Amino acid sequence: MSNNEIKPPLWLLLELTHKCPLECAYCYNQLDFANTKDFMTKEDWFRVLEESREMGAVQLGISGGEPLLNKDIVEIVQKASDLKFYTNLITSGVGGEVGILKKLKDAGLKTVQLGIQSHDENTMTLITNNKTAYRDKIAFAKEVKALGLQLIVNTCITRQNIHQIGEIIEFCDALDANYLEIANIQYYGWALENVDAVLPTKEQLDKAMEVTNHYREERKDMKVFFVVPDYYATRPKACMNGWGSTFLTINPDGVALPCNTANTLPLDFPNVKDHSIEYIWEESESFNYFRGDKWMNPTCRTCPEKEKDFGGCRCQAFALTKDMHEADPVCDKSSYHGVVKKIVETAIKSDKTPLYRNKQNSLHFIKSNPSL
Ligand code: FES
Image (cartoon, rainbow, N blue to C red; front, side, top):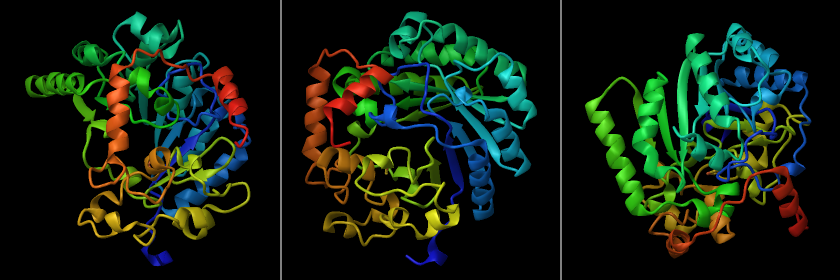
């Protein structure tokens, strides 16, 4: 693919830290996150913003871990506003200093995407392993609305809360959310490690969809999106809208990635401390690796749907087949589709309890995988 055909990185995601006060077992962060250090300085983040904006980036996600734990967040948002980014904070609503939201609004923040896992305190505590999460999140949601910011609630759906969809929708409606995203989780990082403990059944999924559609037909005030989980699909999603086509993620240590979990792949990703965004996006080997169709195996290269799904998700292909060039096994044309079926079959019969995403468990994972 020539440089003329490479489109600009419209969506920039800054993962300001991987520290998080919550311990959700479905987190997509890498299992060895305890190895990632917050090496990026405020000045490094500023340079990333400037260079990405010059390349054409317009949408900015500020994420983590919990981005409110980064002491420079207000200045970073201010810098983004000065550069005319549309800035979206992706947060748990837990752990920020008092008054932080007002400061962020004054700095130009436009939208808050807040994770709310349940209408019920006990379920929220079970999922997050944090006793104040429920109280903190509700107070945060109310403050978002009081400040006149746009509130998008993101509810990650697992076996632990899928039966509560109706109540969760009503709860978010009562919070006056502008949008609700019901995100059936995808299985990467901690979620894949915990698949036996968190995957719901197909029947539960169908019921949840029915309840969501009923709300959509009856009421129109809050827009509700429903993200179907890959494992119950027969065609893969167009992950990241195609590798290196739209999304650029920067990790807390400065590593640049075409998607949040790309560092699970056996590729060397460049660091913004060593290279310009222009070089990373246009020239680096890893960002070019899955552009076009030359990398595809015959199943994908000859498939009439290759322009639609680009062979599916590279991280999922590698996680499930150990070959990152394979078709995404979610696709029923993939010779590995049986792997997904087997995972589902085993998971729905399992009564395992989830392993929380925390430093201790991450260090344990690192210790038992010395090759990392
Ligand atoms: Fe990495 Fe899909 S999550 S390519």
